[in-house]
Image (cartoon, rainbow, N blue to C red; front, side, top):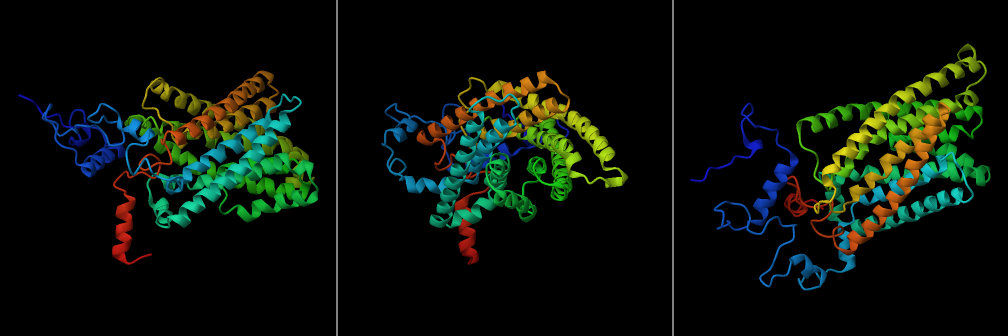
Length: 435
């Protein structure tokens, strides 16, 4: 006699084995009800005979459906034109430009310079601008050709989370301009960079304002440097305190639930970024505080700068430990994914790069502040490896486009999940009479 096994999330609270339901449980339920697979006669259960819809299935001739797609033998999907694939170009593609700009930032901060290193940084800086323009053109084409996707991208439970990536990408370009452009041009670019933070502060990603302000205060004259220093430090504090509250929810999730799915697990490295960028901001601003303060600041500008620099360096060292902790937690969380076939490419793989650029810049800042050559060497080695990781992820992205792992229906961040379906949402709008 067969016994029914009740899933743990369907048990009553207090029962042995109960766990809190997760979004993955909802996705499995919605997916099963949408596809209506027949009952499996072999097991007598309601499990689908052919597995999940997005997984590889086998047809009657023994060939896989995925191979049929690759060989152009599945009809409509195989004949899908490239222009139709633009419909699935999501906001997550801006993680690519975030990571590219982050690499340019890392190269600029490497203390051990050699001939050609500046040129390599410029290449990544210019490439980032090209990729950013490419993303703007592609996502604009998506919204123009498929107008319903614009509203759906803001309502989707996953894709909407990547909308700030576009703003952060623009922020990395501004940061790179202040690093690579100001010293090589006239006063016009210097004045432009000074005014830009004032214009974009309301929408600027809070956590990279501080590093940007640190880069500006190293070149600006005293009155302007003080304004940028105060504004950058204040807004960086807002960003970090907000992220600190989100940290608690993140840690609670790790302690009470299982790890995220393999495809989304690289996103755990995002936890490295807030503390890392804050370290770079505090230590960088502390290094420039003496040239930014007037002589009569708080009675004695020189003495105030000395005290603030000491405080900034030690607070940065304190937060640097938090950066390392989140980094190692994220690394060990991927140990179970090594060698597993389910670890397919997703745009979240760029989380291997961008948040860890904060780790590198924070490490280099701490090494410089405390005069520690070993720490600077470690930061340089990690930064060099990070460039290799960027190359690897970029190549895997191109491969995923070719293999239809991304830019394909139900394969990207815009897939139906959590009860959200773009077709259902469009139907609601038609019934409501909206455009």
